[in-house]
Length: 486
Image (cartoon, rainbow, N blue to C red):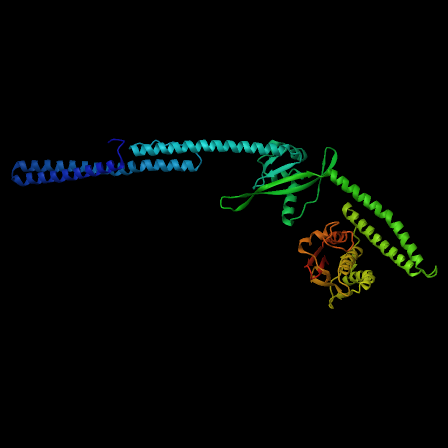
């Protein structure tokens, strides 16, 4: 049969052959039957005619069966073969194998389909090669930019494998490029302490959402400090869904700034110590001036003396805050904990602020449970300083003839909650975290202050594994909450 027949021609031919065989078989049977009926059954010729007719029927019947079976096998496979080849070609294209080609024969339509498919595959191959080339060029360009940056950079893929690392990072990690790219960062970290610290810091920062502390690294026989930043790589898919696709670890060298910060801290500490002595001498001299045994002061002199005392005490308070700050910044904050009752800390804070409260006619209320609450194991001097500072702020930001509440409750079996609440102007929620930063003051605040008290208070509380937070709304006052472990 012709190999270039169409499916219609194949079906027509097959049906025609089957019909011809059936008609031939019927005609042969009719002729044989007519011959047999015309012959005398007792004649010797009858046996010969019967045998010959049976043989012809058997041969023609067998031939019909053979042709039918052959057509049953050939026809479906002949029809399905081009479709199977087309399906296999489409699967190859789907698997990005653009080198596949079809050679369909049988009819002009099949040959046209084959040519169109091959042309599509060629165009896809050319587009793939051009896109891949562009991606490679873009990748090399990005890697060149990263390598030209002076700061160490480590790029991790979603499986925490080292996707790229620049020369500065290789130097401080003391690893080779061929031993890093494509390798598991966690496996390398097993024998690299610095990389292990970077990976641990990434987990800690993502869990606590806090800025990492400077990383101290010894390299080239000198001590360097780096600020580590973890930048998540997010990609938007075709469906608009954003997914995490790795992390970029950027190490910013802050050694120079750290040295300046240490010099600043040392300078502030030295100046604060030097100022305390003359300030104390001024306050002692002022106290002698007010002694009636020396002589009475006229109203103007008394007003001037009171002004000297108030400003001297404010300077002494500021120098004390600066000294506390330098202790925290230099890392030499020493705690001397012992068992203390919360009410003792509250009483200390009230006594320290009673004069100020009386001056502004502020009523200090104590909220303390009648039932027994747990004792604290803390540095009572520092926690008392925290409560004193919070109570002082509450008094200063309260309206005249107002009230302030200071109290303590048993939060749970393992924690004590102490708080100071005022009913003044309140704090905008935008500044609830900023007020705990050094030197920050809420915009529009007219009351004088150094902007260090809340920052130092939080440092003192966190040094005891506690927390200091604020709850406030404009016009409804503020509530500062200290939670400490028992």
